[in-house]
Amino acid sequence: MKFRTHLVPSLLRTLKVHQFGRRLFLFPALVMLTGCGRSPNMGGAGGPPGGAMPPTEVGVVTVTPEAVTVTTELPGRINAVREAEVRARATGILLKRRFEEGADVTADQVLFEIDPAPLQASYDSAKASLAKAEATQEQAQAKAKRNEALVKINGVSQQAYEDARASALQSEADVLAAKAALETAALNLGYTKVTAPFSGRIGKALITEGALASASEATKMAVIRQLDPIYVDFTQSSAELLKLRRSLEPGKLPGVSKEEVRIALLLEDGTTYAETGRLVFQDVSVDANTGAVLLRAEFPNAEKLLLPGMYVRARLAVVQPKAITVPQRAVSRDVNGQASVWLVNAQNVAEARAIQATAISGDKWIVSSGLNAGDRVIVEGLQKVRAGAPVAPVPFQAGNSNAPLKSSAATANP
Image 1 (tube, one colour):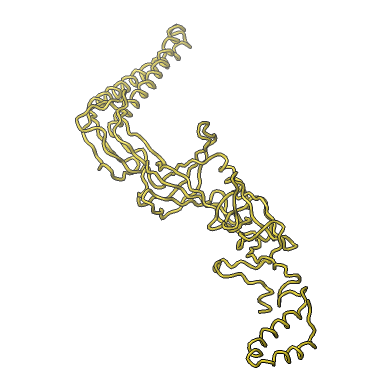
Image 2 (cartoon, rainbow, N blue to C red; image 1 turned 135 degrees about the horizontal axis):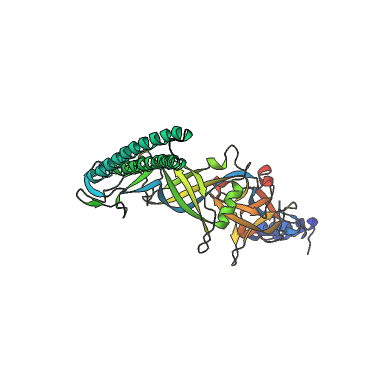
């Protein structure tokens, strides 16, 4: 029902009959007339036509490719670059140990002394045999030379000449054999002084003075390990190795070659080793039981802090220069583990999209497929989003995510 404004004076005259009644009912009457004079098709002040709800305000981030570092942590063991078991090569009683256990030794340093007396005698005997062979050779050669001149004048028979010549050749062979025997005796005598094959750190002595060292049994005497540099052997699944090799292809790491990729080391006590390492080796086969591949890194170890057998964790950092990333809070997963995000399309309508989120870098997921540069991903206000519903996107402020969202229209017209 709609009242006209010319009825207001007559109504006021009626209300004046009683002064108290006029004061009591005048204000409600005017309010009712004012309300009844408004068209039922008009919305509230500032509201949308017909009383429709405004679009939901959501905070969005625009997808932009960026360089991210993906860190892979793998278990590993420390191994020496070189390791040698020092064994006896001469038979005899051990006379002396000439090194300090657990100390550094240099190449060719004498470590043990074996009693040389028996081998010295063998050497002297071989030397005498050589001298005898050389004397015999000289005599045989002289005889062959005389017979050579006499056979020309029939002073000796041809047979006698040939026998003298054969004796000379045989004596020459005897000299060569005696020289070889002397060299062998000299080597055996030299083996009585056991030396270090290379520079490194030696462990405890495995044989004591007075014990018999046997060349035939190759008695183990000590172990030497080269500790600087040192190796770290770790394993990685073949699938992850394929990703790593693709990321290390030429051009994907600006200014860094495959040989220069650095690796950090996490020690057993949780601290990080001060030096970084580099990849030096990849095994040529995959373990059929574990599906893993052996990798090897080399680290400086001047302080000898890293020791063979230690358990460590290698952190391999791989840079992806143009990765697509989204904040972790924008990604949700269904019961099957499928990741998805909400996007704002060109018509400012919300839509869901499945993605492949393969790795994490900081507080972001690295997306391998499903998103493109320029896509607007909803980060704030996800609980209000419905598929196909219009939304009012505003830039997401990561540092103030709890603050209320403000649209551009509200900012322009407070």
